[in-house]
Amino acid sequence: MNGETVRVELGTRAYDIHIGSGLLAAAGASIARVLPGARLAVITDENVARMHLATLLGSLGGAGLDAHSVVIPPGESSKSFSRLEKATEAILAMRLERGDAVAALGGGVVGDLAGFAAAIVKRGMHLIQIPTSLLAQVDSSVGGKTGINSPHGKNLVGAFHQPLLVLADTDVLDTLPRREFAAGYAELAKYGLISDATFFQWLEQNWQAVFAGGPARIHAIAESCRAKARTVAADERESGERALLNLGHTFAHALEAECGYDAARLVHGEAVSIGMVLAHRFSMTQGLAPAADAVRVEAHLKAVGLPTRIAQIPGPPMLAERLLSHMEQDKKVSRGRLTFILTRGIGQAFVARDASRDSVAAFLRDELSTGRSQAGADIPA
Ligand SMILES: NC(=O)c1ccc[n+]([C@@H]2O[C@H](COP(=O)([O-])OP(=O)(O)OC[C@H]3O[C@@H](n4cnc5c(N)ncnc54)[C@H](O)[C@@H]3O)[C@@H](O)[C@H]2O)c1
Ligand SMILES: [Zn+2]
Figure 1: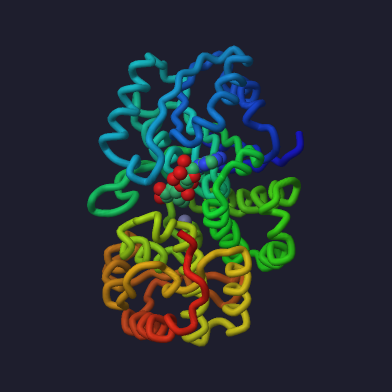
Figure 2 (figure 1 turned 90 degrees about the horizontal axis):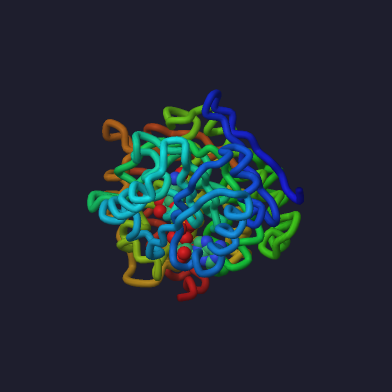
């Protein structure tokens, strides 16, 4: 196989992530190996269905696996109770048995919704993740977090439900819009920034090859999956080390909330890019990390075409107090203290559980007042 396999070590719930070229067309054989004779409910969205569903269904049929598909509208709004109800009813109408499986073919939206459906139908069905966005391949398809949104906030209703197998076909990313690829790349670079300076340096030198496809893309995704798999195996339910995966995310979630989750203004990975730069810059102002590292992080994310400053987000200027109030509503707040992932430099992130509200407020006010004049080009619409 032109690819790599990463194992997520979770005892009786351990599973493999296959990363490589041509995996979608070979999915039937891979799934038949772990679930011989199973029937499958394939959940996907309209965009992915148009481009990749026929390949998957052909492969499943070729391996003698009976499959039916459920196609949902694309976009974050599908992570809702009403869509969950429709999906679970559709799975039940297929009369699947407990040993059968739900397959999620799509980005993080499909993975989270289908994963949650798999977690609750018949108190838990097998789940196969077939991630088709870069974000889903390096992040959401691995680790077992599933769920939907509530009017109270994102991802507030859900369950931990580990997949049985993850098939990340790196060729399907060729049809992903460049903006979405870049957004996923922010999460990929995150693994270097958290704990692997060598990987970050490799990305600085090889990012163009990762965007182009081929062995460099496979290597970068496999490295990311190894990092995520290690973290999840050490701390499945995020009581400690797994929190490091939220590098940049406290800022990012506040920015997304302030944009009303309007993807035309800001998609998640773009918010993470800005958030990671802010985490490095805040760490620098606190005397924790060298200024040169913050400059390097920003330069790299900018080079791949990601936004790095709040002022680049189209729309009305943002206010520090409003961003702070979003941060305080984030579920990462524990007993009133703001938990931040800060850093001592590239590859040296750590969990800071008692960041002071005043220092974050002062930092944000400063970023927002100097930002407008220094920012580069706006995010392309
Ligand atoms: N469970 C987790 O651990 C976890 C982690 C991170 C993010 N998430 C969730 O993931 C979601 C974001 O995921 P996403 O960025 O993949 O968004 P997404 O699923 O909305 O996909 C982005 C867009 O790309 C399209 N698309 C996907 N694959 C494609 C392909 N191969 N070719 C062409 N178009 C394609 C989709 O139709 C969609 O329009 C959020 O809801 C977030 O909360 C979950
Ligand atoms: Zn993220």
